[in-house]
Length: 418
Ligand SMILES: NC(=O)c1ccc[n+]([C@@H]2O[C@H](COP(=O)([O-])OP(=O)(O)OC[C@H]3O[C@@H](n4cnc5c(N)ncnc54)[C@H](OP(=O)(O)O)[C@@H]3O)[C@@H](O)[C@H]2O)c1
Image 1 (cartoon, rainbow, N blue to C red):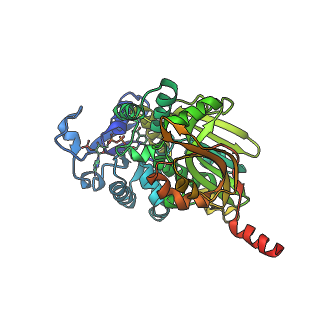
Image 2 (tube, rainbow, N blue to C red):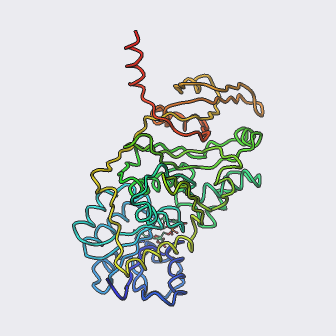
Image 3 (tube, helix red, strand yellow):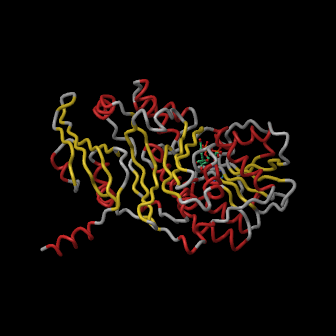
């Protein structure tokens, strides 16, 4: 346990400055920022020059610094910084979900080998304390699912477009101005950012190392007026939902895509930059956590919580990962019901529907605009995703439970019948 923390901070942008501000308003924590590493030395800063450096070694090799807080916007550079700091015997706090999702196996191994601790509560759902909750509170509970709104900027955009009739472009611009959006907004609106968070939560919920490239994500970029009209007529809102759901005893399906939610859904009223996480388990049943998912202060508050946890020696034990009797893997062998809005017959033929419940061919604002609702496998969606994006096809999960589905099993059954 360290009684006084001397912090080397990487990044002084939205979250870095938010954290600095929070630390300055905290009388109880014995932690001080001694050096800040940034990228552009010419940028005007709110602190005096001596605080800043552009040389990462000024922090990594400084024996006085016993904690590194990594808050930069580049995942690969962040990984190098975090790995080196941990190997140099410094504990680290980070908010970088892309870096974490892409490097969790190495980072868990480095912590074990060097006996240092990496905490990252701020990387998933901003101010909502979900990682430690899954790690500690749900350690022995039988978890069924962890799902919700994990991306503040796309929820902000959807709120402005659906509730306030703003254009998508204006809403995105405003989200960027307010500091909610990632430097590359495709990470948000394309559903990548919530996918990275889902991969991080999957480790703490089920003990899985999920590879981001194997998890289906579809964003809100292709949302059209026709989709909004459809949702409004049915009394739905559209939310970008990340979900992990237990399918069989030892399998979990992970996916991110827009979803219709009706007024009875626990996240129907979760708007703007707020995030919401729903955890379903055997005995505690359903619990919903709602809080600000983006912005300097809410995210900085989660970083602060990790910093203070390090003061009393807290570390993730990755208990579910190390428990051999609870081995779980992720699967895309599931069937889900989706709404698909498309233009041409070739668009429609991309999909290998198992069942169709509704089909509409029509015209919207002088253009072909058709939709179909039916059941499709997650494997099929993963396969055709690049083509869907190219053709501006919008897909929405209708929100029904995912069910186990294996094409091989069905084909085998059919052969046996013959
Ligand atoms: N914004 C949010 O609401 C939010 C929420 C949760 C998590 N996060 C995560 O928090 C991290 C920071 O996000 P942000 O919004 O604060 O980003 P930001 O406002 O764009 O700031 C990025 C900072 O990183 C610095 N930087 C970039 N590359 C660097 C390098 N190689 N070495 C040293 N400094 C470097 C930049 O330096 P200059 O100032 O010189 O340009 C800048 O100060 C990201 O991983 C993000 O995903 C953000």
